[in-house]
Length: 247
Image (cartoon, rainbow, N blue to C red; front, side, top):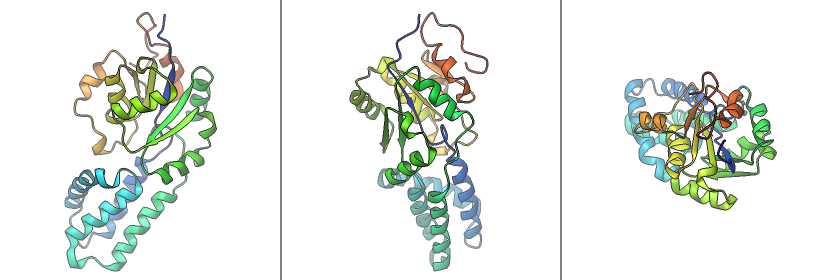
């Protein structure tokens, strides 16, 4: 016998479509732009510190990244930073914003299969305008019962989202690539978390205690979304073992 699933939530960035890969390319470009001004290792270390400090000011996404890069470059390069350097940094940010949406393998099939069995909602965080454009570019928006774009993913934010959909936390499943944002907070509420790892992981999305999250009885993990429906069928004390590759 399985638990009743009232609602399934999906993350967007690096769960349904690529995102962090673009930031890695962008950071390579930033290193090249500032190569004459600072050591790339020093740049990387200081940039992540500035991004962490700025989270409460700018939130997440390409615009926040670009502003943090300019702040870091100004600090490290000082008067050596030129107008052309700043213009080049802004161009990197614009390319990030304009990059076409690339769905991960099997995503559309997984979304359709899940939607045929359970109500589904997209819960993604970041800049409102950019996230809206990603949802539109994905072609998936109409498959969801709702789209929630939030500034942060924590237990209270999830609680508010669930209240809007009339779902109990114990009947909620969140699917995403981030243990910190997608899985941990939902487990804390009493829901289920399905971790779908991505090849790239942003340092600021690291969870403080990943082992505890993975050991949670309501935690599942699978290599991609192609096995998601079978994973959902494993929820419940008497449910069968997860499919191969999905502990």
